[in-house]
Length: 235
Image (cartoon, rainbow, N blue to C red; front, side, top):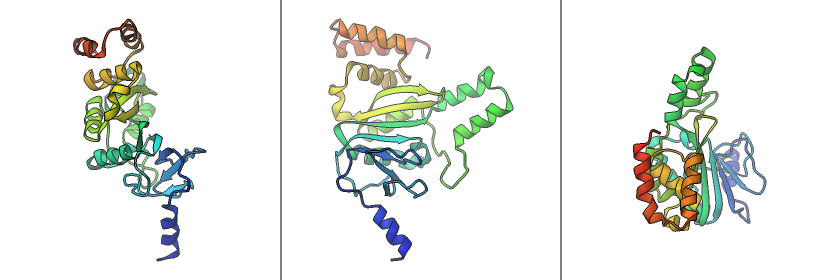
């Protein structure tokens, strides 16, 4: 084994003890007290490894996993398998936080009156396809509530929170699907809006339906009412 290969192999060994928070595809976002993992050594992560396949890390170990601006760089054919792998590492009460581009919201920006100039349209293309400034900085996938929900279901996950950041990014939180009955009321409403209504919950909807739950209405009774309202209201 060459000296370089030996160094890379050594960097694929997790520390002992392993922190209970994992930052995959960390890039320059090195977090103290977390296990920061990336596929390259550019930012000196704690561990260098293929973030889609982490057999050296234990099952159900991490109470929080973060993957910010990462999943869109992974081929579409490996989206579900990657989520399965990250879900394997998640503790039963853990949360997987993911930030990815929203296909619908990028399209809205492309038509927005404030974005009808050369500078913003060039930036929009970069947002959609990556900066392409270095190898690997290419976006290979975009996301909608439908595709996120489908991929999550196939990976044994559920969306427990979803909101839009900076007009074009989904901020998503996933829980193991086996934990659906332990969702808080707020998480459950996020889940219903996103997975059944195919949109992020708005402040008014969150306040109204939270009030209904606080008054004692059962989730099983409210769900069809919420879904029917969402399907008849404009998004």
